[in-house]
Image 1 (spheres, one colour):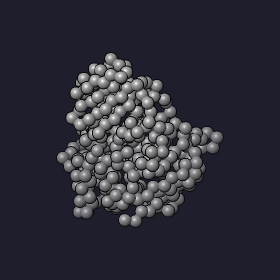
Image 2 (cartoon, rainbow, N blue to C red):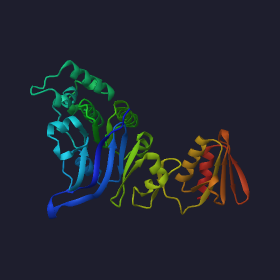
Image 3 (cartoon, rainbow, N blue to C red):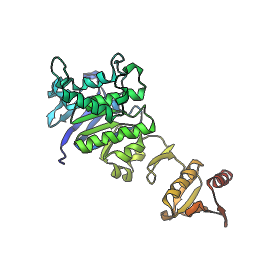
Image 4 (cartoon, rainbow, N blue to C red):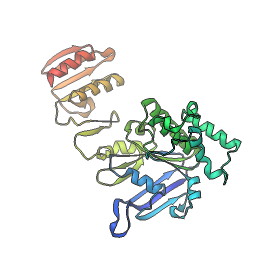
Length: 338
């Protein structure tokens, strides 16, 4: 499948206002989105993610720089052309309570239905498929006002699906969803990118799902810079540690999660023959306030913990070794040692 550049920013500056009253949020951003890829935009609250998405969607102009969509300058698009090219789901509360879910999703076909807005058999088929894809078939005749926040979000995603745009932009589309629904939506967006060759960009605070599903990441740091790259490269290069400005948490590259920073705490050398057991023993140690040192790091620590299969653990401290046979027992011992 051919990958093409769908969106490109060259020295783009985002912000609000004009002239002397202009307030810059980000300056000199360079980035591109390709078809067939899912990209996640990560950053703390107030980092400027929503401002960037609104700029990319054409809802507010960039302060300077160039923004190209499908090889054309973004400001050359008419409103009608833009609605066929860019699908947008924002976090703004929609005023559509008097519509049914089916009617709301059908609005996504408006760029194609002509002046009278009549739906063809093909249009209706697309609407039914979109409702099925987001798991909202059973709510199609319900009013939007009757939906939960998560259901509203799914309905808006279905509306974007029927627009059939090569570029889809979403601002925290999984924010109000439970775990199962978050995974379903992320799988759906990934399928849109990879199977239907669309460029999909979404902002999210769900780091776990971003690392698992995204082909590329855009990281907005506290220093107002944006770093773009393949997910695994950014993780291993240490950029995830710069996502938040505080010193209270750090990114655990081994587990792919953010955890309390325990660098100043007592170190425990951890050795394990089973990867699953190693992960959850490390999870317990970190929660109890210990700093985990893996055996291959070559760092000497006063406490060592060896984990064998069957949850048999050998805890060595001060020349003495104790056998631990359950997580409950290990937890109690660690409480005494802290």
